[in-house]
Image (cartoon, rainbow, N blue to C red; front, top):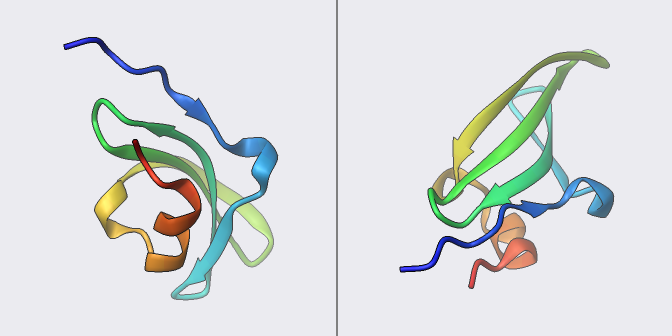
Length: 67
């Protein structure tokens, strides 16, 4: 099985709010089905983390559409 490249999504400004945290999608790795996100609270960047694709809201999943 050929490995797929990581998809850079930072220029698309895909983001959502969850529990008073602003989460912005940075990239999507189709091999591991994870997204790299930047998490901000109260306007300050807190951390960069990885989340499973399955944990994203339905609207965000439709925007990314893994192939």
